[in-house]
Amino acid sequence: MNKGSTIILVLLLLCACQTQYADRGNKKSNHNFDFIIGSWKRINEKEGKETFEIWRKKNDSTYVGTSFTLKDKDTIWKENVILSPINKKWYYQVTDAKKTATNFALIKSTTTSFTCENQQNDFPKKITYKKRNDHFFAEISDAKMKIDFLFAPLHN
Image: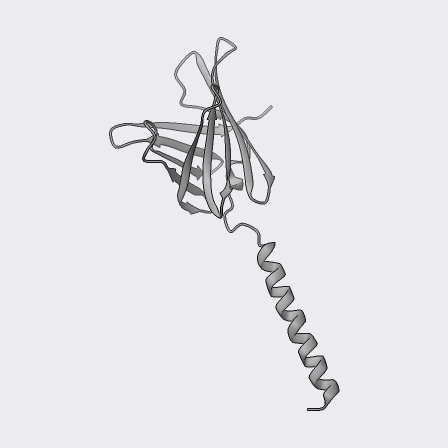
């Protein structure tokens, strides 16, 4: 191998290594929760109440949601949620009306579902979302109780 070929080979190797390391820093999340994006209405709510969830994708690794319940046009319950990684681990971060935040660690996910849990929280300890056709199902639970939520897309 002549000197020119050696220099070219070394430059190619350096470029390949730089590309590999640069890509690591820009790697997109391998989690996709796009199935929750949109405006949703709970269809199994108690009579006289309406519950809604609104989700948007802020960027490649952050989903932002708002949940609220209305009774006679008044908001009786509200919470904000951020689904995103913290130090490379995904969390479902709930902030209630009192601005109290609770983190639930992602323990399982597929392209159409995810489960998060926080065993130190009083209730719920586990939160699960599952897409079913054009609806999504959510469940909050602990060892003794579970509450099911069925949401349909909200069409204006």
